[in-house]
Length: 447
Image 1 (spheres, rainbow, N blue to C red):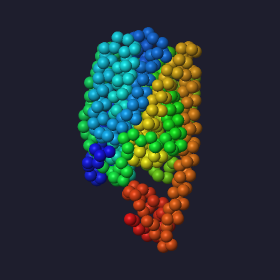
Image 2: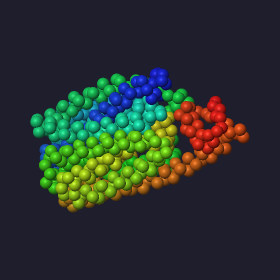
Image 3: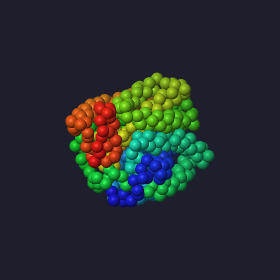
C-alpha cells in the first residue's frame, strides 16, 4: 500500500479528509444512483423489447452484481495503485458502458454494455471510495462512513425522476447518453482523493491478495448475511416500479417509489451513522434487528393496493436498509481489523454480487410462473429475515471476544495499577477507556 502512504497523519480526521469525504459522497450518489435506479429502466426495457420479466430483469441485476463481483479485483488494484487511480479507471469504464448502451439494438447487447461494462466500472469506483474514507478517518470513522454512504440515498432520490423526465422529454437512449456524460464527474472526484498514511498501515502492510478473512467464522457468517440480504434488496429495487404499474399506478408515480426509498435510505444512513458513533451501543445488534424489520416490510407490500400504503412500506424499507452501507464498515473493521479492510470488503462483495444477480431474476421468474408479484416479495422478505439470523454467530463471537479483552486488560495491570500499552493510538485509546472504567484512580503508563 505504498502509494497510500504519502500524506501526513495530520490529514486523518481533519484537513483534506473532508474533501475526500465530500468526493466519496458524490461517488456514492453517482454509482448507486444509477445502479439502484435500474428498476425504472426495467419497466422501460419491458415496453421497448417485449421480453419476459425474467430475461429483462437480468439487465438491472447484472449491473449491480458485476459492480459487487469485481470487488476483489478492485481491492487488489486499490492496494497496488491507490484509490485515486482505480476510481479514475472506473469512471472511464462506466462512461464507455453507458455510452455504448445508447446504441444497443436488443436486450442481449444491454447485458454487456449496461450490465457488465457499466457494472464493472462502478465496482472499480466503489471499493476505493469507501476505503479512502476508512483511511482518512479514525475517531469519526463510523460517522464519516454514514455521511459518505448517504450519497446512495441522494442518488436514489435524484436518478429515478431524472430518468423518467429524460425519457419523457426525449427517449431512453438519449437519457442514457446524458447519464454517461454525467458519469464523467467520477473522474473529477477521483482526482480529489489524495493518498494518505495511517499508523495502522505502518505496522502491517496489506497483501495484494489476502484470503485470511475466510479463516474467521464471523466473516463467513457476515458473507452469508450479505448474500441473503442482497437477494432481497435486488427484488424490491428492480421490480417495485413494475409491481406498482401492475396495480394501476402510473409510470411517473411508480418511479417516485424508488426516489422515496432513496430519501428514506439517505435519512437512515445518516441516522445509523450518528447512532453507530456511540460506543456503548452494539452496532451488530442494531444491524441485525434492522435487517429483520426490513424483511417484515416485504411481507406487507403485496397487501398494499393503494399508492399511499405502498409508499409507506418502501419508505420504511429504505430507512431500515440504511444500516447496510453505514454499520457494515465498522462491523467489518471490528471483525478483520483496518489492515485487512479493503481485501475483506472486496471478497465480501462477491457474495453481494451473487445475491444481486439471483434476487431480481428469481422475483421475475416468480411473476412469470404465478402472474403476480406476491410470491416474489414473500421470498424477498424471507431472504432478509434469514440474513438477520445469520448475524447471530458474529454477535456471540463479538461478545466473547470483548469479554476476553476485558480479562486480558485486567490481568495486564500490575500490582500498582499500571498498564503497558502497545500498538497504535486508536487501540490505545480504547484500552485506556476500558482501564479507566475498571480503576479510574490508577495512572496509565504508555509505551
